[in-house]
Length: 273
Image (cartoon, rainbow, N blue to C red):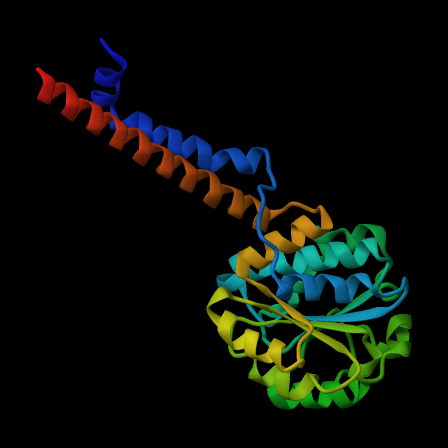
């Protein structure tokens, strides 16, 4: 049987098996295939990378499990970068599901293992009131928060002795599964560098805010996570997902090329016989 006949009679189940294998391969061995890194991710990375050891940053976790697929990897890679830079972190949530996401990210990033709770990091938990709460938080943290997520008074948390308002933070990354307008209104225009962690469907809106200089950058869904992971050499879910997309698309293109060549050769053979 000729190669052409073998291709023509190939059981399609082998094609799907190949797709399945290639989909799981990056999970076992992340490849970090080339991904063009945009200015939004570069701006987010460079703003944090320029900070000094001991500087305090803030991260908001305003989403729950339903939006974690796109947003959680962004938080983890930023925290890993912050840990490398020896920064201190304040986690806060203006959405009720956020504190648990923050705890998970602190755990996975290594903060809970490498750093001291209350000295190097703190989770302030959920603050109700959404945009009103954001406004108060930006003006006076202690006026709106009395204890952390675990009920410890702020007066007993050494890190919080150095935090008064939003300008106590050198960098603030807000994470949201909804509109970003509230964060722009309440957090921008001050000395703090602001970065957004968003789902991809809000990309065009964030481009406008970055163009006006209100944001120094933002992470665009899993693509943004992958770009940041490559910059920090901390390959995670984002890079794995992009590897899966790249390798399976290449597989599909390869199959199309092979199929068309086989079809062309088969037609020539039939025409010549």
